[in-house]
Structures are given as structure tokens and as C-alpha cells.
Length: 289
Image (cartoon, rainbow, N blue to C red; front, side, top):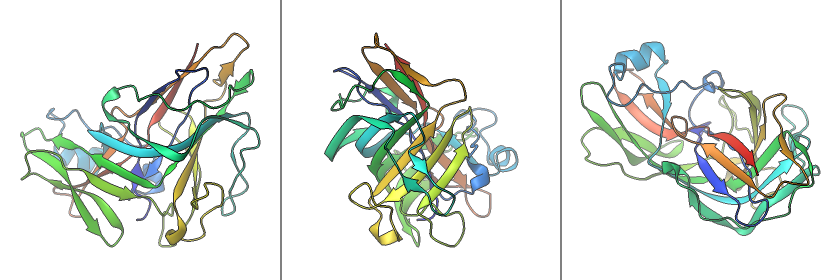
């Protein structure tokens, strides 16, 4: 699948010491210029019309998902950027990072609904320092679902569909409930050629996100769509707003907000109907205590 929009909300809470920190972006079939994604009008509101979404939002907007399931392998804090190099030759370098959660088999979680996740295994306590970067290593497979209601009362529900790019969520107004659909992220390219990397992109509301597609070992950069198994997302906080750990810090709460941002909706090619649903970027909030 080509750059399919993705993101979601993740809420994690440490139970033993410094638990987990993370941020991530996941793609969808959108253009780079659309990364500053507008929020859809409230479901059923006066602006929830095909015309408004088409003219005012270029046929693409974000909303809250009903399900956003993914598998997390590792998360951590960094004093310098964990993705280095120049565009076209980016590499994963976590030499300045401390892992705050790690699982070789992965922990599968549902990030939707605003609920706290089950406790994740804790890693090292990050040394007292100011951390302007965070990373998350996850599987490149996702399970999603959602719906949207227009001003006229018509509700579109997600259902699984497959096209030449792979699995995605089709929008169907004949259903009575949302159905789960998969997404496989194996291409971060914006054009016709495959790419295993996404250079830093400024997110709406501040901060930047970068990403690299990795092989199954979670370290080696993927060289083609067929050997992509992991996604490494790196987040840079707003300038002057690092996560500060002191000797008095006893824990870290990380909230990756997916409300209004973790799911995306697109009009069809004709622009006269809702055509598809997909993932979209989530936003992190860090609280040290």
C-alpha cells in the first residue's frame, strides 16, 4: 500500500517506575501536503456534508476511531534524534536513547476509546536529563474500524476491502455497524516509487515526526516492500518543551491522543461520496511525576 494515512491514540501509564513513552505516525493514501490534516466536522453537524468536506477540506479529514489495534515492541526516550542521515539515506540510530518498554514478542493493544492500556512491561529508568525525542517500534499491521454520519443522517460504516495497494477500509452506508478492516504499511513513498523512509514532517499543533520501515529484527532498514515487518516512528517535541526527568521523578505517563486525529476519511475519486477510511497520526502528551 502506498502512503496510507495512519495515526491513533495511545494512552499508556507506567506501573513500575518509568514505564513507556511513544509517538507514532501511520500513513495512508494521502499526499505529503496533507499531513497537516484537518479535523472532520462533528458527526451529524451542519458542516458534515460532502460539499463542505470536498471544498473546505480537500476531500480528506480526520476523526476518532472505534478501534485502533497494533502491536508494540519497544518505546523509549532520546536526547538526540534516533533517525539520522540525509533524505534517501536515513538510518535508525538509538545510541542516545533509553528503552522504557521492550517486548521481543510484542504487546498488542487497542488505542481507541480513550481507555488506559493494560500495563506494558517496563524498561530502564531514563537517566535524569532533558529529552526532546521519543521513538516507538511497532508492527506494520493494523486493525481499525470507524464510522461517520453526515448532516442528513446518513451514516457510513467501515468494512474490509482490498485493492491493488492492499487492505483498507471501504465506506458503506448500507451497513448497520462498523466492521474491522486491516491495513498493512509497507511503503512510505509519496509517488510511484517505493520508499522505506519518511523525513521529518511538521505535525498540526506542533512537533515533528519521522519514520523508517524495518525488517523483522527491528534494526535493519527494509530494502523492498516484501521485507517490511516493523515501523520505527520518531517524534521531536516542540522547541523548548522537552520531557524533563529529574532525580525526584518517579514515573512517566504518556498519552498519545487519537481523539479527532487517529482515523481518516476520504471522499471517492468523483468527490460525491465518502469512499474510504484509514489510519492517521496521533499526538503525544507526556506527564512526569
